[in-house]
Picture 1 (cartoon, rainbow, N blue to C red):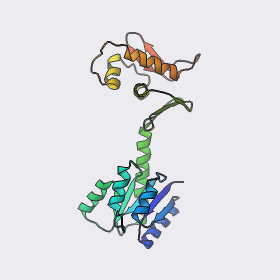
Picture 2 (tube, rainbow, N blue to C red; picture 1 turned 135 degrees about the vertical axis):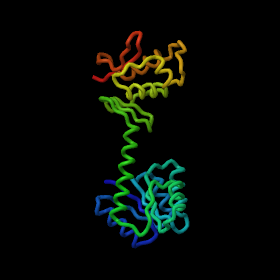
Picture 3 (tube, rainbow, N blue to C red; picture 1 turned 120 degrees about the vertical axis):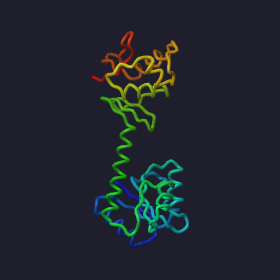
Picture 4 (tube, rainbow, N blue to C red; picture 1 turned 90 degrees about the vertical axis):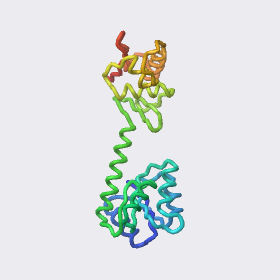
Length: 225
C-alpha cells in the first residue's frame, strides 16, 4: 500500500487530510511537529509527504531542506495558509515539489499527491533499464541478469548502459570512446576490447547465444534474442 507521511500541527486539518487520503486507498501516518516529521521522513519509508509550512519548533521550510539535503527523494507537497508568491517560491526552493494553500479542496490535495507519485514512478523508470532478462539499475549502479547480480567495474557499467540504451545498433569505437571515456577521438588503444571482453565474460555463460556481437571493421552491438 502507498504510504503517506502527514506533518501537520492542526488536528482538524490533519484529520481532513488523513480521511481523504485513506478514502482513496492510501495509508497515512500523522505527526504534529517538524522534528518528528523529519525523523520519520529520513527513514525513506514513505511514498510522499504532506508538509505544513508553519510548524512549532522546526518549521516546514527547514524540514524540507533537511530532507533534500540528506538525499531523501520522497516528493513533498507543502501546505500553507500563506498565499504569497514569494512564500511559494521559498517553499519550492527549500525542497517542496508542489505547494497547496489553505483552505484547500481535499480532492485537489489527493490529485496533487497522485501527480507527484506518477512523476516519481516515471523518474524511477528512466533509471531502471531492461532488455530481455538483463536489468540495469542506474541508481544502485547494479546490473543483473536473470535476477543475479553481475560484478561489473564502473567502466563496464557505463559500457553496458550505452549498449542497453541502443539495442540492435552498431556502436563504433569512436562512439564508445566518446560516450564512455569522454574522448572525441580514437586513441588506438585496446581499452574497448579489454572492457568488452570482460563484460562479455560476465554477461554470457558458455553455450548460450551471445548478447554482445563484434562486427569486424564496424564496431559492437548488443542484441537480445
